[in-house]
Amino acid sequence: MSLLERYRDLLPITDTTPLISLAEGNTPLISAPRLAREIGVRELWLKFEGMNPTGSFKDRGMVMAIAKALEEGARSVVCASTGNTSASAAAYAARAGLEAVVIVPAGKIALGKLAQALMYGAKLVAVDGNFDAALDIVRKMGDNYPITVVNSVNHYRIEGQTTAAYEIVDTLGDAPDALCLPVGNAGNITAYWLGFRRYHERGKTTHLPKMLGFQAEGASPIVQGAPFEKPHTLATAINIGNPASWRFAVGARDESKGCIDCVSDDEIVVAWRDLARCEGVFCEPASAAGIAGLRKLMQQGAAEPDARYVAVLTGHGLKDPAMAVEQFAAPTPIAPTMAAIERALGW
Ligand code: F0G
Image (tube, rainbow, N blue to C red; front, side, top):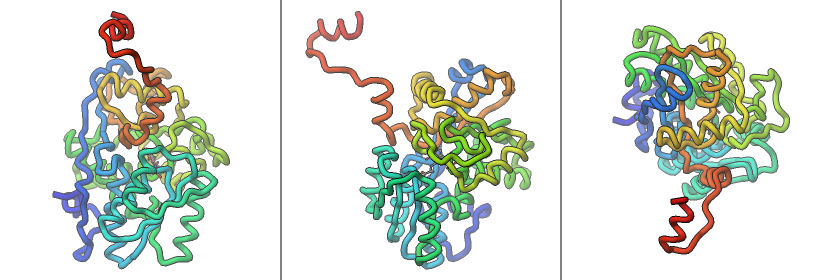
């Protein structure tokens, strides 16, 4: 059953909403015992959103937003993106026979994401500016042209993304004690909180989880309490200086008695590597911010060790292979002889 069919009663679906699908959602919740032990928490699960059809959690929101755009008779959609939203918008627009326009910050999106937008046939525009500048233009385009904005300022995106919270509860049988996730434009933390609250109101959970959101230090406006003019982080997906859902993220943090903190690029890289090496799960750099943040809170004595944590791994590692090779050095070629191999391996 498709994601829209499965959670139909919880989503803004009517009799005329086309139930499109690329088999999004239903992503694995993977236990992470080694990483849990190493970080010092009792129980840790990884919600691996990289297993969605375009390799990120955006597909949950995009399937809903594109379905509603179709229902409302739209012909084209537009988004600004650090890469994943554009990949997802391009794919679902292609699937639905709509035109997709995607505006990205030039030179600041990972190669895999660029390839996706090109392959799915979007009209790709690169601007000399950051994500925030691109989103400003997209909002103006939405005001001035007959085109549907599919950034998370479109509330159908948030609605679709609530399904990840439902899946976590459906798998675990209850809400976790806390949810750790990266924060960029702040749509996802907003969606999870809405989803957990909605499920709680329906009696599906005994409690509500704490929301623990993490920005990259160089792009941490919510933590600092002021927009960043020139955000900078190697986690390009969350390189955002003025999040659209800022207010809702603060609401999720405060209502859940959670936190929004920041982690350095070095802390992100360590967590990113540990996820791959300890658990065999390869996500993109930004996705590791939740694990980096949980480790930081534990080191500060600010997180409960005897609790059940879920960390959301928002995108797949193959989105950004160049960063992995850059950080961890691809080997230089040697002669194809046993002697050379033995030397290279130190045997
Ligand atoms: N992780 C990844 C891999 C992302 O691509 C994003 C956002 C986030 C985390 C943060 O989620 O914005 O809901 O707080 N990517 C957007 C994009 C901005 O354009 O693809 P958020």
